[in-house]
Image 1 (cartoon, one colour):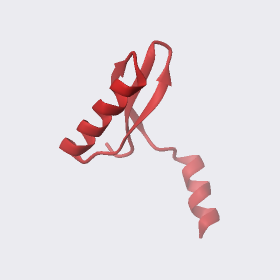
Image 2 (tube, one colour):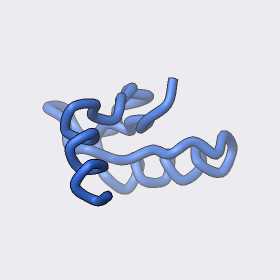
Image 3 (cartoon, one colour):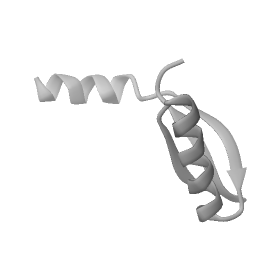
Image 4 (spheres, one colour):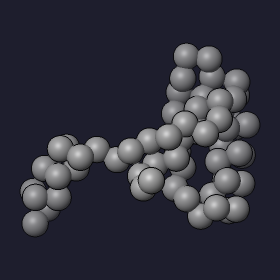
Length: 60
């Protein structure tokens, strides 16, 4: 079953949607924690060209 799930994850990667960009990682993490607490949606912090992006993961 794990092989099937891994194959599907490669065929259909999780959709991402950028929410905000911050110059410092600590600011981005703080915003991400607040966003998660308010909305309950999964977010992640990723490095970007001009700082760090807070990105919503999965779903529509």
